[in-house]
Length: 240
Image 1 (cartoon, rainbow, N blue to C red):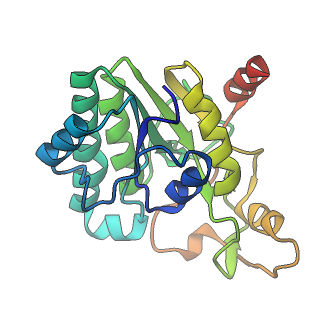
Image 2: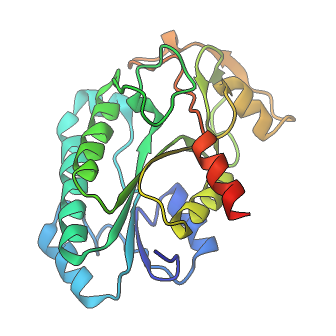
């Protein structure tokens, strides 16, 4: 798989905009051009383009909205991902699926790739549903991660939630390394374990960030979904 001829879903999103800077010759169709729920439209797009691999980052990602309207996540995150698995299988193309650290229960942290999964909200269940479809296809890679804007966009951050989250610009560079590597299965990508508050203040030490608790939000948020990223670290040492 080469970043010069990959198709990237979710090209207008936060990650897509960063990947465009690093792989401008790849394909970044809009939702109107490439709706993952519209199988015939996607198939037609595949037939018209010289696609060598797919990175699937398009997803519906708002936990509180999904709790109220889970069908939106079923369509986008589960059915849409299944459609891409079928297309990649038909075309014998590698599929890289962007999943989330939220597939874990959050009761211990530093999760490894083969640790048991148990989502605590419907958003995470929908992403795990996508993982199930991807696992059925051998030529695939599931990337579990957590990333955010390069500048923390909120006034407050959790002091009691631990994560491996990093800025989208840092994650995008790591993802490009993985795209160029010949690996399949599951891999975790992220930073060292820290609270969301520490992550937010590390992004911009001069910005004043308030403190808040996961108990203050109206959806279930796991306490510690930090990731063990040693597999990625070993891979990159081998690349160097």
